[in-house]
Amino acid sequence: MADPPAASTMLNPVARVVALMPLGAMAFVSGSAAAAEHGMPQLDISTFTPQLVWLVIWFVVLYVLMAKLALPRVAAAMEARRQRREGDLARATQLRADAEAASAAYQKALAEARAQAQSTIKETSDRLAADAAERQRALAATLAGQIAEAERRIVATKEQALAEVRGIAVDVGRSIVEKLTGAAPDPAKLATAVESTLSERAQ
Image (cartoon, rainbow, N blue to C red; front, top):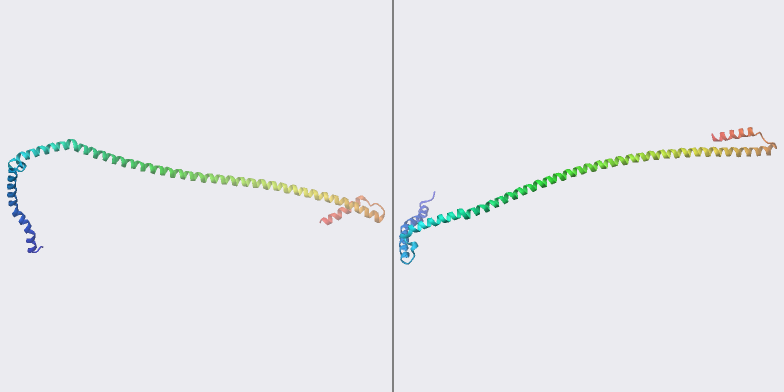
């Protein structure tokens, strides 16, 4: 709560204004009369009524002009701006939806491409593995055939060499016997002896 001196201090200007209002009105009236005498009819109190009437008339005219001409243009401009703003928002929403749809389509296409690539890689890997296994089997069969053929050639060569060795051994044995005994040995007995000797050495 304000103290009494402060309250009186706050009320003094108001009281002064209220006290000066009658003086101001008197000064306005006297000034209006003096102005009317010096050629300012708009300040003549006796012409206030026509001035108010014309003021009302011009106010109505200006109001009608504003209501019929200016305000519709302003309303049209505001409506056009509102429609343009709504159109921009709708276009932005549509663009956003299109961008989201394009992103979803891109992600779907990327996922499909990845799945297809993985499937292609798997198929290629399986095919290459099958081809490699088939080539390995063919190579193993070829090597087995070559080894068998080589073994057969080795056996044939060995048998041929043994036959040649038998012949040589028989000839050498015949020559030795003829030189030692002076008579030709029995070919059958000589061949049997050579065959027995070669068999023992082969074992």
